[in-house]
Image (cartoon, rainbow, N blue to C red; front, side, top):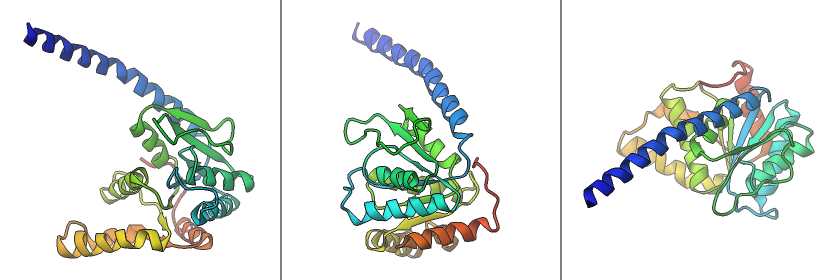
Length: 229
């Protein structure tokens, strides 16, 4: 009897998985239809826990404002902290301000600086991450936690494996990122040989808004703006 119950429960799980495909497809369709109309954008990542008086919150506002003045829109995760700062800078600069929101058990709520017609809601992280990558002309990665690292390393992996075209990946904050990059160079590259020297060229480390704009401008003097994948 116990074996039959386990088997029945497993069949119910498989059935639910099949129906979930339609919800996943719906999120992709809705995201593609809305995001395909926004034009060239830069995705900004960073901690939801960063407070408005933090130097990186203020720097993110400055960076985002300069990015929209350079002709790009801003895409963030739509929540508080660095995400709010990114949308705020886009709003202050009069540019496109996109928020890709997701329901979380803590720290996620819409910030007030997202364009009312460019706020999208997601249940699935993997669908949301496709939108970040597919419709971004670059990543600006501010100090953050596991989610920020996930998005940073996923972009590196996709470019490294030629699943998407190369675009600028810009880390902001030497004091935050330098230790990680030292580990990548000394451990992954030199000690174990798990990456190639040219993989390090995919990453830019900066400390100012002007440096971010210079990297974007220099890259797109020779590359065409277009969606990825």
